[in-house]
Amino acid sequence: MTLTESDLFAMKGVNEQMTLSEVEQIYLPLTRLLSMYFEATHRLRTATHYFLGNPEAKLPFVLGIGGSVAVGKSTVSRVLQTLLSQLTEHPRVDLVTTDGFLYSNAVLEERGIMHRKGFPESYDVRRALEFLIDVKSGKSHVTAPVYSHLTYDIVPDRVQEVNRPDIMIFEGLNVLQGPQRQQGRSLAVSDFFDFSIYIDADAADIERWYIDRFMTLRETVFADLRSYFHKYSALTDAEALATARRIWRDVNYVNLKENIEPTRERAHLILRKDPQHEIASVWLRKL
Image 1 (cartoon, one colour):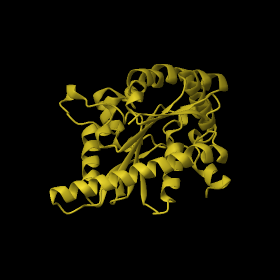
Image 2 (cartoon, one colour):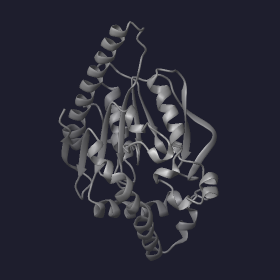
Image 3 (tube, rainbow, N blue to C red):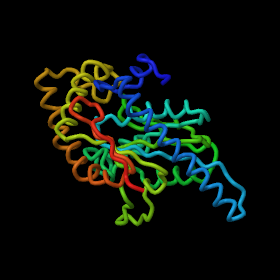
Image 4 (cartoon, helix red, strand yellow):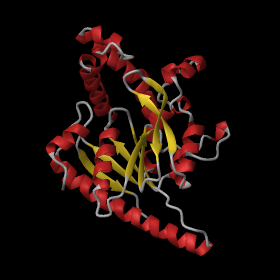
């Protein structure tokens, strides 16, 4: 165990609870499990390349992490990124979020789906697939768009470079969805995962966490004049509470029930949280 309280504090999201004890009991064993999958996958790829008589290329192990808004995906991703990078082999671990593959606000406005931001149709799935194909093909200097939570939009002329990492974590709301065949696609983002994790919790608990986070952000990030949500910083407590509940009811809860939660059983592993934001159970799919 190499993490300190200050390390963990820097990784946690707004109003999220995670202790070093939980990291030691849950995330350290999970890191060891992932390292076993990482090593086994590498051996299989080496054997396959040998069988085919092809030179072996360095291909990243891709870990997908999905779940609802406010369930703690980003914190879990950052903790696992840190722990995995501290394995004996010291693998290089990159973290990429699907936020960067959202269409820009201008495109969403043009298509009349700004209110559906975060739903499957708000993502440039083709670009995400092209990115994953390049990464899994062993290409160097692959780039992903960058998203700003402050401006609530894609950052122009800025990209994140992924240069043949040993492990890449791909985190987002809808990463476990199957192919969107009605749009003529036969591939899904999840097809490129070597292992996947779904962060689960009761919808009522997630709603409470979302509202608590909204109320905290109203007094912090939203107060920044550059923030897309600056208008919410002037709301009274009652108005802010009503706004957060409305956004959850009309947007996030609908997305959870229609698109996110139905993909839960597609994950290799499910981390189930209790009302205190702590992991209550871990479900590993039988091989």
